[in-house]
Image (cartoon, rainbow, N blue to C red):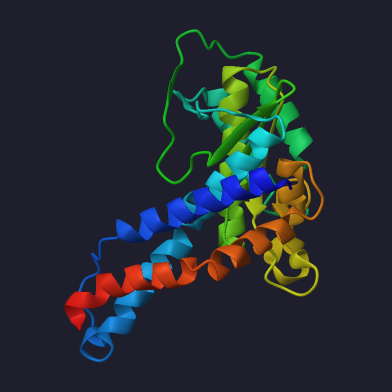
Length: 267
């Protein structure tokens, strides 16, 4: 990663983190811990909120910067849901979601796309409108390169089986919505785990070994994801170095001071 790109990422990260904490509003209701450790509970609210919003606050701006530098187009138009959803496609979608939740009936994503395209061959889409999908199910990062689309959603690195099943449903819905609008579309939809918190193989520590999502195809972790986006090797090491440099330059202390200001009324 060249120095100019590193500096651009650093400044965007600094801005995003400052912006999140500066605009944070504590809205938590009262609970018994407020009587014992009110300051600590409020700090946890800020930090917990930041952890939850890492996708939009930290990862998304970084991905878009790296992707643009690697020749991707960031697609502003998102994947919308057909309204009404054609019955033929809705039926296939439901069957595929269920099929991929069991090892005995599991099908790979290429077969899923093939079946969706077959279902769409008999659909009259002339009077079909497209609306925003329900909140929390839309595409975080939508890219295009060489006439192919890539849709990503960054997720927690410690998902449980229920989460993975919901990720599977989300990806299949993205495929169904996209194929309904354009059966010839070339698209890959994936879950991205931005880092590996373990010292060995990520997939051995998650319910992915039970099926549902296929590692390396439906879901990418750490450098699988970052190297694809950036076009460079070992991109996550560069990201760690950027975060370390930001801390050395005082960003950690600045953010701590902002959190202290939020807590000032309690002191």
